[in-house]
Image (cartoon, rainbow, N blue to C red; front, side, top):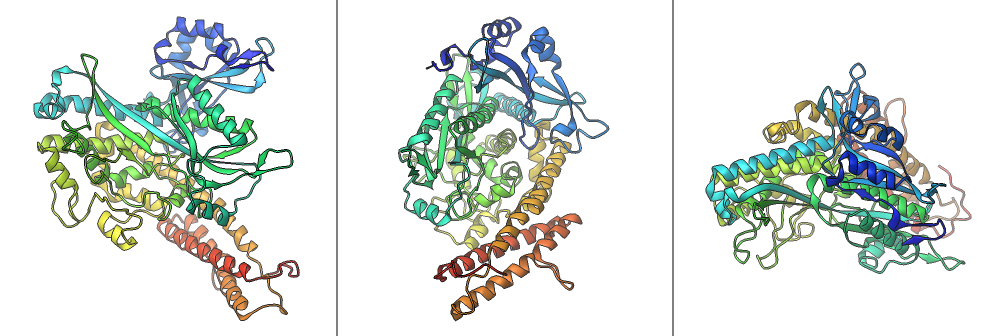
Length: 630
């Protein structure tokens, strides 16, 4: 596609430098052919999933390419989230390029180079963060998990001939183990400044007026631009479509759509695990920047609008054996697909994932926003359970449904692989057949098992959202955490399971402690400075609407209840403190158990207040004649 207005063709741009072209000569030649690339940025990812982004002139990079790639650049720990590791008196970090993955060029289509007539580009190079000679970043943890997984599987194949035979291969024929992953990215897009009308969105969702419908106007254009750019970057998009959330846009006086509020999804082809995580991070940039250029805002929040469907990021994982003759074998696929759902390896992986999920979940669901999504009624996962399908002819897909767009995919995949590997080792060493492992996985609560926990069930082919009550779900599948703090506490509560994370020194103890500290800090800051502040604004907006002349006993009864809740939430007195104040005080004295419990009470009270005030407003006939007052 050519942009004649700016006198350049997109076919003339360099969108990606593949992993097999990271030799000095190749790099220098490509950059000489593309002088519009003015900057290079080494992209490290800290423990909260934040990526570094700096603008280093490309001339600095070209002066000493080999030295730059070997020695990288230096920064200090204050610029990244690594608490307890990069400290004030020991804060130097080296950012070192990863030459094993693709490097993307991020073009600024709004800044045209005067000499070439092309948009100015920044070469983004995925990198590792090095502290005291040790890699301490999210990408490094996933890299270690991948290497440990591969080594262990190769060792299991060598030591257990029956393991290889269950896959229809010979251990000597395996040249490499491949870990494959893919993510599905959901997001909301809207016209800047527009406010959500919850009732309208909720009705549209129930009626499924948006799901898989045709995109229109500027949303269609922006989505098509995203898919085209993804192709040019070698990301192989598979589809882009509307999701369940949203309302119909309106046409303004100029014949253009406005009041846009829609939920979309973009999917692209799988890749090796580390590349898949890098791809996802870059796709988020493409989506945000492309929709912004078209005058639209994008949010990747898990639950941007309360009461309406949130955004997930279903994560697909698989393990392949690459054979010396070039063929690949999926280690999860059974020998006879008409007989079994999974191979023994697949059953082991699924068992390990679910048995150890309490210590995996802290790396998947790690924010207040994420927990807002995981509630019954919106098809988001609410318990630790799997569905395989009613029969082998109609199997379910192997995907983890709990991640959201802000999940740190590097750490999530690393924890998932560690959990799966624990189960695979059990399955292989037990010598059990696929049928025997399926029987154990399908156990009822209270039934003894060699690997899985006695009191739990792990499989349900029923609709877990409708078939079970909350009490039944908790009894069968375990009580899920309700707050960030409850989730983090599981890393201490389930010490034996937590050892799975540290196998092969993938998650080292100080890394886990640093992650807990960083996540706890974000939780408490958001709780005190954002959530409570937003709730105070809502409490203040719940004003008295009826006058002394025009009201019913029903109005007065509702307002009394509303005002009582308002005072309980936000009004201090000499003898008692409001709920908001008590939460802040609990955080200040680091009583996180109390802060977590009070956070849940606050959410319940706010929900009750919303319902009461909605009912109260519906009963008011004339708003104009009533001035708001407290």
